[in-house]
Image (cartoon, rainbow, N blue to C red; front, top):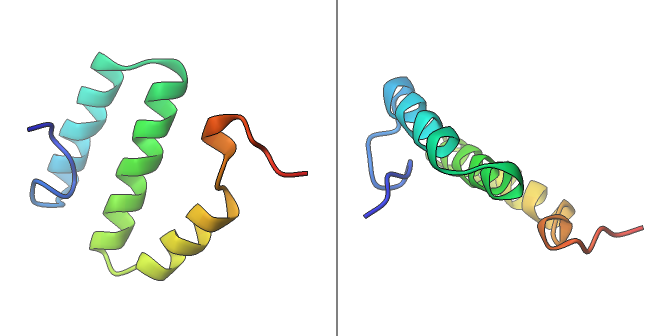
Length: 69
């Protein structure tokens, strides 16, 4: 199972481990998407789920090249 902030304790150390894993294994667009997901998971774990929902709604399509005008 991949390391995510949903599968491990959301501590600063766990986040740093995940960040190192992302930068070691991914690059470019895939790395950006992984950091967005990790940041959103971390914010959800901290109780900012409503903020994350608003962010995801506002940025829907950006990672698929469907940038709204």
